Length: 610
Image (cartoon, rainbow, N blue to C red; front, side, top):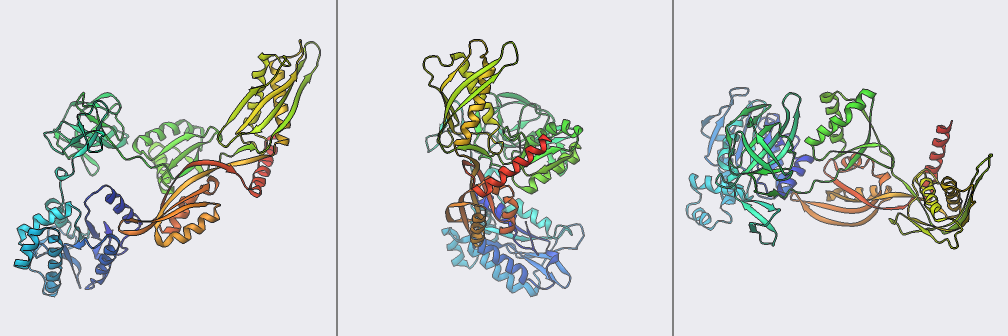
């Protein structure tokens, strides 16, 4: 649906691209035609030309809007070559009549253009077209239906939904010309047990045509939590017939479900039905285990619909409840929202100890916060998450740690000498014991390791965990009476701190692998922005997306620079760009930025101590 005044917008392009990837037939409806200037069709003509430039010459009108001094109040059907006139704000039913004389020539030319495009690629239709000069109406209807199904034509129609103009004609067109679910390609399911069929790639698969005679297969594609009815599962019957009160198996969860109160959704209402057939969309209430994406069918079928992978969230915020009462409700409310929305994530960062909420973008997360407030009466605040920095070393060092305490009676004595050396990035922590001759009894060595790890977890430079290093205990001494595990734990801590002073410690930051898709004209601005974010562009290639030229950029960018990128990308690309990112590796923080982080950490520590 395209706004006749604003034209193709960012989301229109994105939806077109998704439909293209899914091989979905498409039709275009120019709505709000009442906002078109009277007796001026140049606006809609220019809009159609713009869509052809984006999506190809297969974009073709199957109607002409009737716009005069009364405004938009009818359409000319280019298949049947008759007009449909409407009374604005009337009952929505068009009156059939002759084509207005002022539009007769234009309608004839548009009809011929449509017929010629429909006939392309079909030899028998081309022969009939050249012999007769046109295609009879009964042949044209079936040929247009076939062309729409095969994506050879994307029909354009005109409506004004608010004032009920041409909406009945739109519904009639959908009924006659667009493909029904039964005309879709057979559904390919994967079989987890021994395959009944095998597809051409050699993978185990079961091919199910969309037919009532096939075994029952249904897939839940949406879940909603209703405050009165509980969880509502909305599903599509891929094949077979589902009857009310039927008991089916959930192949994904390995459980059994009973479909009581089978219904279809009409607007905000549910209407109970006795059965649903292949291609139908229905709803069931209070299924126990079934979630979005699950495949169900008769017991023993054991097949799964191979769903496309869910994209990783693009934006993450730290989330905090405003009050103690909100804290008690937050987790339950968010988990209910996650049942409805597969793109929502809620988790705790073990390093920063923050609760994080992640989604596809700022609008998505704001919508979740709004639902929390309105539906679950939970107030929260959002803020940028802390970046999980780490620390490491770049040089080898040796140091001795001696813990000695005497206060009457048994004292404390622990003495160890350790060597610390850097490891390759991502190696973590290694510990080795090279003590000979019993300088330290074996039972005290684990205490040294524990003391080192506890100190490393609290960091040395700015309070971030130390990683990618190896510690080797090389010497030490003990006291027969005063030595114990606590003493050697303290000795390990002291030795580790002394080593860190000599081992050239540095801060590490997470670097993300980022992939950006955007129209080609924004490539220069995006590259400049990435450079300003300390990004390293790994590659750039031109791709075709939605019929237009687009750019695919791969880059590595520090996470600290990507926290607000979603908003910036929307601004630069006018909402037409998208990106995804995932953890790539850790890299050394530039000294200037590291100095600021260390200074900030020291101020924070001093405030806490006060």
